[in-house]
Image (cartoon, rainbow, N blue to C red; front, side, top):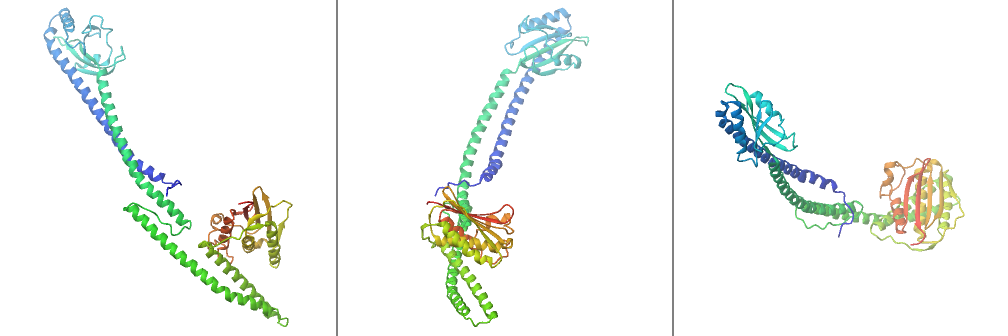
Length: 474
């Protein structure tokens, strides 16, 4: 059977994604960044070492010219710059001690004198100084290596500077990063697909188990879970199946016991009721004896009503409760019930007020005896649980396609946390009133069999309001 209801397993799926896919994502991202950083460091280190080696070699080459005059030295620099072999990849610059560009492998019009900080730093420290960053003139990222040119008298007469664009290097690093991200995306997609399949293999059977468990908790005892798994989930399903079967068996035994006991009690109660009425017909009976017989008759009738409720409950449990449906004037049935029960309540000092109205209430198809049973049970509950208010109000009206019966008492009402439970079988809550706790469960079943609803709520101003809604046509 396909599950149509959504089961709230989002928390399990979320935890799985966070604990598994989330960890894989973080580790993969760290690996991508680590690989990219490793290649970037290696490439820049190699480039810097190459420029540093060129600077050292060229400085050693010009060591012989440093002892000559300035003019001869600068002419040598210009000649060397013009014949520099790698001018297409690296620019060679000669800068004097004032920071002015004297010669460049790019020619006489190579551009303005550079102003990067490593030039002055190389002059002041007399050491090779690197620079990695944007060229102030072009805005392009470059790597430069400046080495000081020291005259024979120890004077720094300028700087020899190698400079290269990192554009191609950055493109290579970006390509490596892109490849790593693509590999990571493929791995993550595989993990997501495999994780999705695996989590579905858990969520689907768990959803089925949850749905069947809800049905069992709702009273569908005996419901079995069909499972295709032979793992922990299969063991859980089998355990719930065993529990459901045992509960169903116990419910059946309980219903059979209640049914047999109820039938056994009916005969002696009928005899007690009959003989008590016969004995009370004796006019020569003294008052004390008559009062005792009245108590016996009243308690016997109460026991008879409890037995009838138990019989109805067993019929409801095993599906034997049926309706004898016929067109019925429900207003007449309800009024007869109210007036009949009102005389009984008046003996206890409780006023039953029927709110008459002139509304036209059509006949409905229903079982009049069963609905009279519902009305009597609700009135009896109002007297037992709300009788201290000494007032009960009853009304019947028509609202469109519904006939609505309302019965309200002025007692203490129902605790809010008990309202969802009062219609459950055998539930009595905090009430101290006598009863089996199955009357409302039977009434609710009868009303539902008619296609209607029975609701209980606390009325404004105190007391309990019971509303029965029955469809005009089914």
